[in-house]
Length: 247
Ligand SMILES: [Zn+2]
Ligand SMILES: [Zn+2]
Image (cartoon, rainbow, N blue to C red; front, top):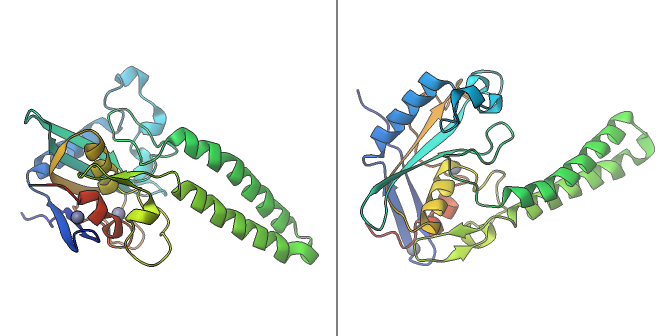
């Protein structure tokens, strides 16, 4: 049986070349994680079963929400010991943080402080638009659009990316393409894993990203299959994130 190659790469603007990280032996740790997911039906492995959080169950990945990507980063610490990091893409239900999984590239408390009041306002505008006072409908829609754009910018400004040269950057600084930041940039497994390793003095030696749950609507993601890092969101920041990694 053969498996499609996972792994990640990105063009580094500083070095003017691609930086790579291959799958290597991270594959075996990815299979171990798949086994835990299929046996335990939850992701809060470090919590005793009696105290398991229902929001950490895997059942919803097989429902209408469909599945998501999971990632493994095999690292060595300064003493040469193997450290295995794991990540889920985006939020798990409404959670950015689950014990035993790497955190996002921002402080979730700051995220809530910005996101909660803005979402409330956007919801209120939506309610007004749907109620329909047709004379100011366009104004309300413009207001909502601007508010959404501002929220996205404010959220993006919370992200800090760290690389293996000890540098840090904002998403805007790290993203190499001359276009706007795509939605969800920085929330995939590869950026979360690499950022955590760089911040904690760990040296990555292999990365695996796989899909778990019900097949996505466009049928490009299948349960238990491996995929390389994505081209639209991850590749344009991976050059920065992988920079300074000597293998
Ligand atoms: Zn990605
Ligand atoms: Zn570089």
